[in-house]
Length: 347
Image (cartoon, rainbow, N blue to C red; front, side, top):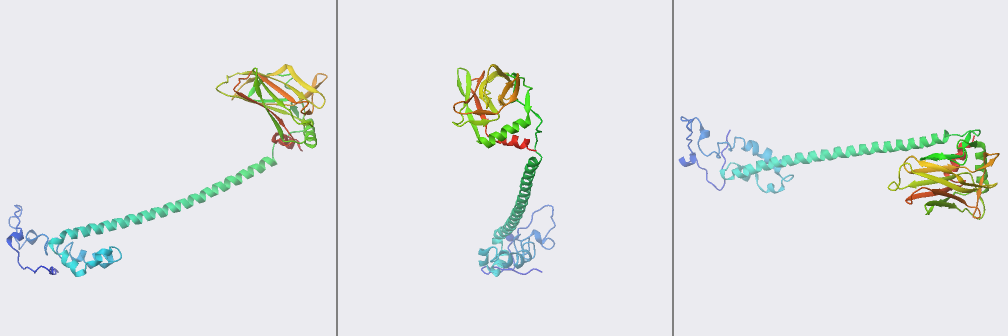
């Protein structure tokens, strides 16, 4: 049922002039008149048309329930609270305020869309926060399991590490990164591992030290490393020669020779006329481990080395470019290599 609306400042008019009726000239409806098609006559923004009281934009849609205090009042729109309910009802039916009706409709849609966007963003943030917490828990579990696995592996290695039988034959030479072409003695000669353990124990008990590193110097195409030790003689069981070549200055198949003077407990071992000859096989990085010996009836036997400032250890390497690095390491009783070998020999 239509309710007559009026603007307080404008008197109510029962009749409208012909110019206000806007009579339709649509040729598709030649017989339409105000009695059977009232929507084609009069002001389309008046009381009985699309924007009147009883239609889509009348009181039933834009009245108190939708755009009243509950939606656009103090809680949400604030400023619109200044428009009284009576004034809003008067404005909604007046043709001069149809633009405001449209703006209010668009404003309501915008507020609803904004509210939906904010709610969706808040839900997305909650999901991201939950996923971050779950991922952090997974990472912590993985890290904990990795640490536990590492400790388990370490205990396993210590409990079941490699062992060396005391009657096993230990070679006098071991090389990595190169091929040995010749040596002062038969490279397949060796000595009992029990003798090696005896030398390690003697070195550890009599002259314990960490290690000594002698950096090689290059002169006249020869690298020279000299381990001076101390005034008090030190025991040593093995020597490690480390050789590295700059790959920009190296050539595949480089051949080099090694000679040296090695003081021992009984005599001084000199290797000169029959040196070690090597061919670099890969990576231009060589590790050469040797144990001193003495000849008895032309057979090499293991002997404990002893050197000091008065009787240093000297090794010379020829055939390497100047852009190289040559180092002689004398492992002491506290050197990791010596500790590992001694543990491997304990049974």
